[in-house]
Structures are given as structure tokens and as C-alpha cells.
Length: 452
Image (tube, rainbow, N blue to C red; front, top):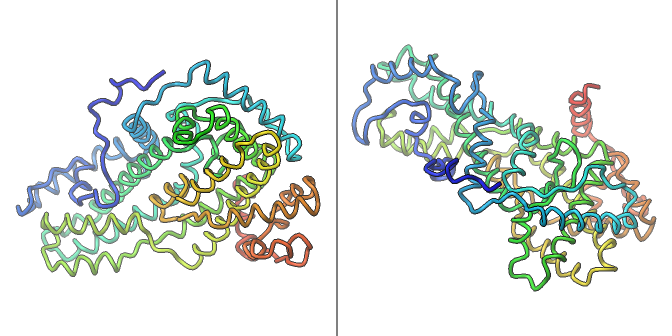
């Protein structure tokens, strides 16, 4: 089923984030009308509007508790998908072709890894179906961001209005509204990023994260066709190669029970440490030298605030978490590179040029890197994937397929960033590093989430 034009036609996709967020839209998102530029604010009217919003709060872009309304965010993602091009439901022929491609890929992978094929049948998805099927995991990963950003926005604006005598007495009412507005803005920003990501990924887990409730090989025919444009290769070869990569990833996530939860724990740990530089915002406002409640200065402050909200400051602890996350994702993709090279290299002359295409795609900034950079300033560099592939290849040469895959049995036996610099030392067993306090903290978090 193609997205119906009636569903989305006429619904303008809001442009929040980056340079597109004038501050008066904060009030507009709450249904509060604001005067034209240069006109004074009627404080009594503002009070009346705030009281009205309080009476009906939680009914639009935020939940009753002031958090993101994830149904709204998902709807926003689907609107973005519809706005960025046709998104037909895969035809029966496409489903049949993908099923055949995955079946052949699984046969080849049986000799390239000890991890078994997943039980669920392969699937062909539209972009909208990818949004639907991955939304729950995305929500789990990014939810810790919301409270931090919402609280920061409320704090900085409360500081700005606290010195205004005519606004005395409304602070307690105003702050929750600002926090709700921040949640609303993040919901829109998240929906936009997820919708754009859906137009780029070729499979369920191309972002190297276990986004599904249960392991399943799933590919997006519309995006496969876009991936193959400009390549002097058959559509069948492109589909088979990308089926190999997706099937290998799904085997890894399905059989290595600790891997998915640890990836999610890293992202959540990073998100919980997000800080917004409130002093920089206040300095920007002081540099304006204007009226803290005039529309012109509100708009300028809004521009400064939006840049801070979606470009948060990175703490030393976040830098350490980021390095560990980058290393783990590089190990996932590097392992996939080695496995697919072994599985397809013997039978597919096009495997090598397709592998180079995937590497160039990563080097240009893959889909995961783009979405996390826009949401939390988390830049996932692909620079270590080739090092990881070399390490896995060295392990396979020294210990065989079984020895290479056995390293995944426990996080304590996994290579570190230092080991990527010295793969031969890791293979020989001369370069091992004990887990530190952060590893223990993440392990504890994973156990708590499992209810152990």
C-alpha cells in the first residue's frame, strides 16, 4: 500500500532544530499567540494564555507528564518519509526476490560463521514499515535526552524572566510550559531525523544496532534500488550482497546475548550525561543588550538556544563512553566485513566492488552517524572499522572461524580500542586489558534492565 496523498497532503512538516527554530515557535507550539516583531508583550494576555495552556496541557506534542509524545514523533517521521519520495509497499515479486536472496545468503554464511541463521522468515519493508518496526528501540535509546534538554530550557528562561517585575508570580506556571515545549521540539527533531534515516537505510540493522524486537532479516527494496544507482552491477548482485550483510548482522545479534543490551546501554549512558551550556546561552543573550522579553531579542535568543539544544557539550565521561561505543560498533561492522568477504568472495565476482561501495558510504558518514549527530551530538566515526576487519581476519587465520567467533562469547574477551592498534598482539594473547569501573557500571545496568 502506497502512502495515501490524502493522509499527508497539506500537512506541512515543521522545521525545528538547527537554524530553523525562531524562539516565538516555542510559544506557538503551546498555542500561545505572540505579537509582531517590535511590538510589546501584553503580560495580562500572556498570563491568560498560559493559564489556558495549563488547563489543556499534555494533549498535543507532549505526554501528560511533559515528556515526548512518541506517537506524535512517529507520525512526524512518517510524514517526513512521505515528503521525501514515493514509498510503495513492496510487491509480491519484490518479497519473493528478497526471500530467495536471503535464502542463498544464509547457505553461504553457514560456512563462514558458527552463528546459526535466525528463525524468522525474511521480510521486505517499505520505509514507513521500517519506522514502525524500529521505533520502540529508538525511543528506549533517546528517552534519557528529553528530561535533560527540557530541564535546561526551562532553567535558562526562568533566569531570564526572574528579574522582570511584571512577570513576578508566574514563574512556577511558566517553567513547566517551557519544559513541555522543549519536549515538543525534541519530538519534532527526533521524528525528522528518523524519517530521513528511513529513506537511506537498506536493511533493518544497517546502523549496526539491534533495532528489532526479535531478530529478522529485513530489507527495503526502494532503498536497495537507490543504493544500486550508478553502479555497473545487476540488481540481483546488489540485493544478494546486502542480504549477506544483513543476515550476518542478525545472526550476530541473535546469538550474542550481551551485545544488543550493551550497545543500548552505551547510548543511554552517553545520553544521560548530556549537558547544555547555560552560561553560553546567557552570555549570548547579554551580548544582545536588549529587552529580555522583546520579540526581536526572543527570536535571536531562540536561534542561539536551538544551536545549544541540539549541539550539547561533551563531558570527559561521555568521550570515554563514545570511544567504547565506536569501538564496539566498529567490531560489529568489521566482523560483518570479514564474514561476508569469506561467504561471498568465492561465488560473487562483484563482492569486492560492492564492499568498496559500502566502505565509501561509511567514510562519507553513514546513516547512523547522521541521525545521532543531529539528535545528541554523538558522532560515530567509521575510521576503525577497517582496523576491526583486519583484526577479525587475523583471528580467523590463526584460530579458524570457530576461534574468531568464540571471542564474542563474553564482553571481557572482546578486543579494546588498543587492540585495534595491535591486532597481532591480541591474536597472540599478549595484549589484554582488565575491565574498568565503567564496564562494571554498564554490566550492572544491563542486568537491571533484564530484571536480574
